[in-house]
Image (cartoon, rainbow over all chains, first blue to last red; front, top):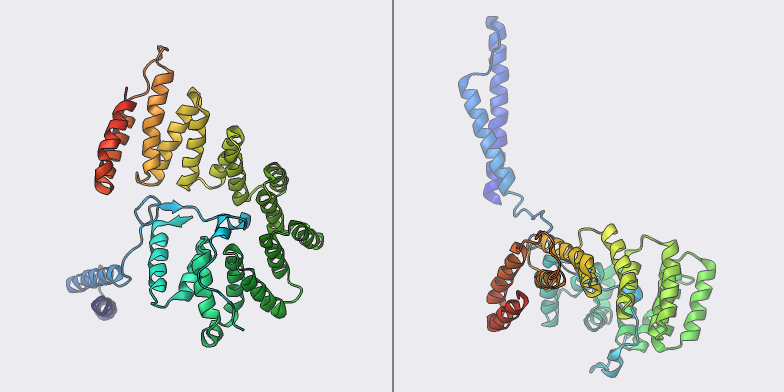
Length: 106
Length: 300
């Protein structure tokens, strides 16, 4: 979790540095009065690198993903809840009293 | 509806608490959330929390829910004194409360004084004639006294008003099955499947009822519902796999004389048989020979 977090922060920093370089490059082009066709090559590389770092961090930091299939091993329904609204009390457990005397002490 | 992860979590917490490893409050919350009926354990661990003044004060306002849960568990384990004490505490805190009135009615039920419980419930219903839980308690009381036809009557009246209550439909289906009125039980299961189509256990119960009713169309529909159960549980429900094998052989027996075009392909039965054998080999390999001989006799 620590490594993923650091990589994520690093990726965000790279992306912001790439944004800053592009803004500076545009300012430079305005001075030289040329058309802005696209950011320079190294900024594009920096963007891709930052993107890869951020995606990797986003997938590793949250931990294990839960399955969404209703028939997967974890999500499958194994039993229904006991119908407690219709619970009746005169069942055979009356013949098996509890061994320990239970009392509410106050 | 309890999923496999929730069940394993419950068992793990139960083991932990039973062996003295703390976590009683989480266990009680999980039991309340999943609505399972583990009254002895709830009674034991709930009393251990409530008898300890420090733990009791740490609960804060959740204390009263624990008292209610404990009262129900005590009634289920036949300790009416504990239940009476819990209800007294709740009455002191919440006088004139309907929930506490309901608990008192249930205590009278548990003690066996049916007439007084009936009086208590009727008086509660006068103030609030549309209280669902009290209606359901009346049905439960009729069932407990052995008056099953009365229970069915009350339950039908209840379902005319509250048609969306799937617990009530489930209860009615189970009562009909116990009385062998399978057509009516099939109707109730159809209602359940309509309202909750993703719960495989209703499909399974419906298929069981249809298989019991027998007759060619019923068997074919039962086979379809066994197949949908297998689909919804990822192939892990042994009963549905066996159901497919039994249905196919019953259909083959019934349509032996007729020269219908053979649209029943034997693939489904052989697939189900293979899946069953694999499952048995993994989980109960000493019973595998029983299974293979039973399947062989079905294929004839």
